[in-house]
Length: 396
Image (cartoon, rainbow, N blue to C red; front, side):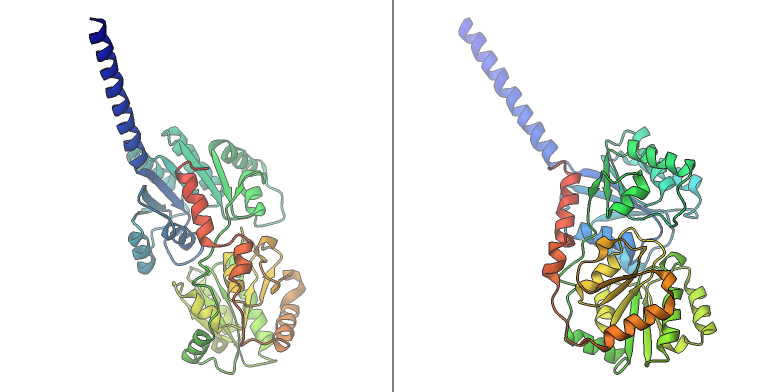
């Protein structure tokens, strides 16, 4: 009788262990449901393309990803790019700046989706708060607030903004930022995990053959070419570049490549006509061939009024371009000795003189592979993707 009892206990223990192991295997193979939230439209530029590039470098076999973009516009190529990485896309049904309607979108999506992770990349104080608060109400266990923006003026935040900072600090149980400045903006402190906006170093490496091809196809041979990459928006301050071009026209046959899309384009076209420099400005819609246009440039100009980091400036330095940024761009964006910072109050004349004098004294045709420098600074997309992937899967 005793032997039979021991046999039953042994058998029960064996069955229990087997069931436990099967449950562990099932849990290990379970897909993690992730909701990515981005501000604006789905297009080639900014956070939208950064997130997609990060996903492209991950093992996505255990990730079930949905992307919600506040905007209701999607670039066809970028949309397809996301789909190829296995991402389901939900576009906003309303004006992206109407907070109440955005909150309603998020309520429906989160309530229906039963997500394990929400990864909010809006950068905005109020919109991050809305995303984090709704996620907490519906029991999303891992709430990631990821700051990509920074404060837009020197005026101290008021009570409203400080409330959102404190709320974001409490509601997000994982806090990420691309820079100290971006962390201070979203959370009110810098005690967060820095996740650098990495770039694809295989893609952003200078090629003399590509430079010749790009300059020839755009009829830029013999011309002095400056340029910038970014959303066409007031905050990116492209008008300041036009002021620089106006001055440089007195010194050389100059062209400016303005790479990006946005609602500010009509205003920029009008301003170029007012300055009578429209023949010197080449507008290029946002696309996935940024390295092609960077190769064609002689200097990169980045006079932003506000930046969380400035990934475009890092991409330009990876192509061994000299880069002139405003002092509103975090110093973390300087990854080579060819990064220069100037105050916008110095005026377009001083900027134009510095850019022209530097380029006159340096070889613009022969550039070098800067991938080792970029990687040492922590801006390799593969490293950034691994960090984020491990966060999703609870790996240390």
